[in-house]
Image (cartoon, rainbow, N blue to C red; front, side, top):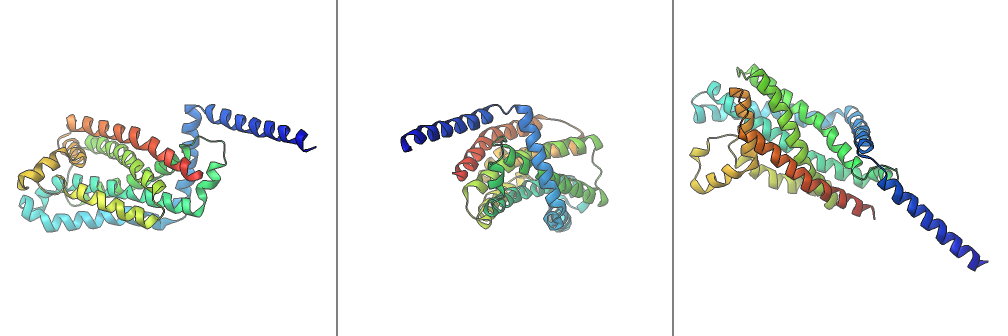
Length: 279
């Protein structure tokens, strides 16, 4: 009796595994994109039901713009009006990039609650749960961008309208790419507080050691060398050129190339870490 059932059970187990393997390999790119947007919609609905998740993207641009403009405007540019074309792009990039840290933190919290365990049982692409969560956070980045531009315009800044649209798209693309770094950290680190702490430790030096708030020429020579190669500086310069001059320069290209490289490197690593967590 036992010798008869064992081969049968083995064949059934092999058959089930073959079906699962085949299902995984037959998910097309279009299906993966559709699944990612479906999960993104779920995450957006979840955020709408928890409005406190928008407090940082609503308040931070207002507080930072007012604070930096009135504290540093006179010292850096002579007056606040002359400082607005400098500081608004810097505040925009800093706010949106730092906001992407929440992606990794929220991801870790959901994993600890077992939310992603249900996703793993579904016949969907492995990348879809992560991509869906990251796509949903683009809504938060867009809110931060709109508020930053609105505050700057209310204070007297007059950017190029086409440049504002181009800068918005560029910042959203770059922030989505950077969020893959924090998604990887969310998959590797076991606590959400640790994800936030490590991320802040990385991002604040990158944003402040850039050309976002003060001219590079005022910094020591050794610091200028780092600032000039800092990807945050390239993104800030690209936003300034588009908003203030309506000019699309090489910094836009470098920012897009950097975003593509970050996504190509960290997205597979994040997916691999996510799958490893399932085991």
